[in-house]
Length: 153
Image (cartoon, rainbow, N blue to C red; front, side, top):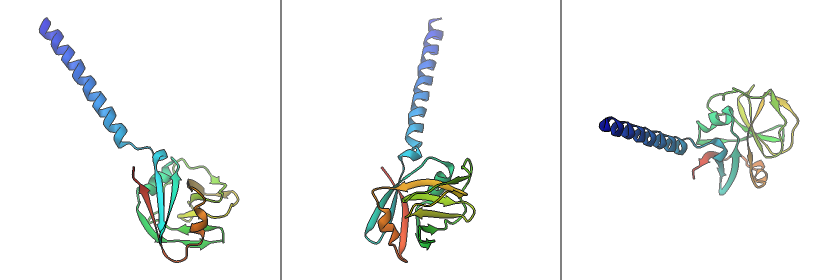
């Protein structure tokens, strides 16, 4: 009887240790996107953006790093086309962008970074926002490579 009790106690402690180890490992591996910062670099300039927690942002993150040239579009945004279209799962019908917003325009498949406020647009999905007025520097980017990558902690 004593051997059964000792065996049961050891099994319980073993399971507790196993669950506790797995939980710690999952917490370390599962970095939430709210902790994710995006570095945007071109020339000698580095900008920082915060990415929002949504399926479209996570899909973009899966493609990083991306180096591309930005195109000016409609004198209010810089755009680029990722290698494939991003998911629209769970996305709202549209978005009302402001200066500094990083978005995805699902109908065309381009990432748009607004340097001016704009009106509500169907198919536009919010991905994040450039910090500290860095959008002014990005607005002036000509035809030079721009790199988007995660900032690792």
